[in-house]
Length: 289
Image 1 (cartoon, rainbow, N blue to C red):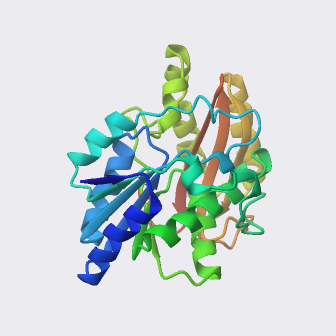
Image 2: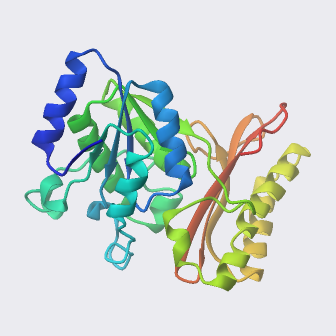
């Protein structure tokens, strides 16, 4: 596995592979890798001859007061795990390499209409930071394929819109959420949970399942479902940001005629902000993910 922290070296390695006609599949991450990330790497291997992973904790997507300074950085362990998983290139730049003039003054990419709803309403500027860094990584790596987990579904929709609007020659593949045996979506921030919080955290997935069951039972009063689940979350000790039922294609407000839906949740448990979602296809058997 090649490992580099600088853009010039990464481009030299990648240029050689492209000259050989080898398709490049790319998995961007912020590190502290878990089985969900490794599932993305495994899927990337099925789509590209060469697999590239980036590890970069992007300061531009953290708002003031968030956990940028304390976000877990485990580069040595991540490097070992990736080397055993047939990754061809690990690109792990510094903030100075990615933003030589400082991230505050960096050119930014914004996706209107998608960046300020749901998580964007509670984390101002977050999705501009995501779109900016992913755009820059795509320019550096120039992959044919890029893979993102569906756990952060809004991020996936934002990136797909950015790629479409900017005519980027990258196929975006979303991969199903990887879960713990009790249903909790795997996340690098799960390590923040106390023992008691970890016991409570799977209720998030259960409430998603409950909402999907209600929708499949022909309940189209989505506001009532959302209000009930917000109350359930508060009763269990969560501080919910939202519990929403949206169209899965564009995160627009769901109407009774819509057939492809997604239930999304964001809630704080102690100091940990947890997000999750579940798709609902009306008229079809549910595919549990």
